Image (cartoon, rainbow, N blue to C red):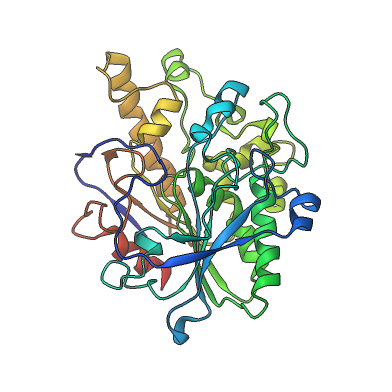
Length: 362
């Protein structure tokens, strides 16, 4: 179920930025915009208030016509009015500039059977990221505290499912891979059971990459001071009004913030989960006060050692025989750049794709 790496590796650090990955063989997907009533009534808006949408590419083989890959795009977040004013350089704040067709990415979205042997000819649903809230927000009105933006990531997912039923009424998935990277990976973790409930006749499994914010960790400052960082400081911003699943809310009554912290949220999932995560994720470390690319102090070194123990402990719990979950966790200092089909290192001679496929098709 889990694949520990026996030795460390170091790769170039990378933020999850749109368009930086190399293109392989990629088919075009068509933009389907959300109907007006879903935008106004269901609050399915991008950060700037414009209506959302998604990209769809139909399966290229009849035998896989009921199989589906869902991918939630990543791209950071914003938690202050200043950050939100410049989030993604302004390009990701709205949908006005979305092209009518889009070339999908590599890995699980590729249509090249040599790159993506298991999923290349499946239906593909690509959900753009324009809400700056880890796909989590449920706001129906703009947040004045955060500069007037809408934070409606969950609303956009809800409306995407509704629009699919309208635009593709014959769609009846039988097998679904739910994926996403970084902020998209968090969205996957929050919504795995939500997608599964939307397709009760389907087998739905989730495999987020670099989205496990956070394992059971503390900030570097708290670690040095001998304190534990509370979940409310590791979870999502309350101003986003993040979605909390009913199952998680029931598991942690009165502690909703735990449901937006991966260390707690995974325990409420019924949907099988395969976590693709670097043991020393540079984005998570930076958020917790440790810049691993700078000259390390003695405190930094102690913190990194403890961080590794925290991460491995969390993942071993997640991947135990008592759960349907698994993970692939190289001991690398990187965020998301090395978690793709071909970019990931081997662990004990096993590739990330082979271990994911063994878990997914078991």
